[in-house]
Image (cartoon, rainbow, N blue to C red; front, side):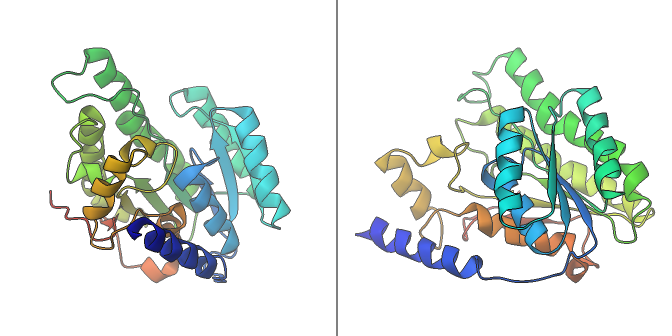
Length: 273
C-alpha cells in the first residue's frame, strides 16, 4: 500500500517535471561526464532543455551514441564523445571536441564516479582504495584543472561536482566510496576562493538514494527499499530528474551569488558532516 502511494507520487512528479520550460541557459555550453544514463543523463537533458548545448560523454561509444540520438530526437542541441575520465588523452579530447563543436565552455558537471565493491572501510583492499580515489577524487580535480582555460573565457562559468549523501552520512557497506565523497566536499570548499578570483563558481550536489542502476543495491530488495524510504522524511526514493533540476539552478545566473556550497537532495534524510 505504502509503495503504491509512493510510486503514484513519483509518477505525478515526473509528469509535472517534464512540463517545465525554462530558458536560463540559452547560449551556454556544458559538459556532463558519465552522462549516458542515470543522474548524468537527466542532468544533460535538463541543461539542454534550458537552452544549453551539451557534450555527452561516458566510457562506452555505444552508450554515448544512444544517449545523443535520444536527446537529439527531442530537439535538443547535444553532441557526444567517449571519455574515460581516468585517461588523460580522453579528457583532453573531451575539451577539444567541446570547443570545436560548440565554441567554448561555460558549465562543467563532473559526475563520473565508481564503487567497484561492497564492503566496509576496514575490510577493503588497498587496490580498491586506490581505484576509487583515483576516479572519484583525483580525476574530479584533474577535470576541474583542465577545464580552466575554457572556463576562464566564459562570462558566467560554473563547475558542479556530484558528491553524495554518503559524504555526510557514510553508508556502511560503501565504506571507501563514502570517504571519497566526503573528500569532494573538501575539494569544493578548498577551491572556491581561488576559483572565485577567476570569476568561476564551484558548487556540489549530494544526492541521497536516487532510483538509478548504480544505487540499485540500496533499494532492490523489499527490506532495503523499506529502510531507504523510511530514512527519508518524504518516504520515497529520489528520481534523477530531481537532481537535474538542482544542477540547472546551480549552473544558471539564478545562483550567481552561490559558490563553495553543496546542496543535499535527499528527501529530508538527516545529513550532517
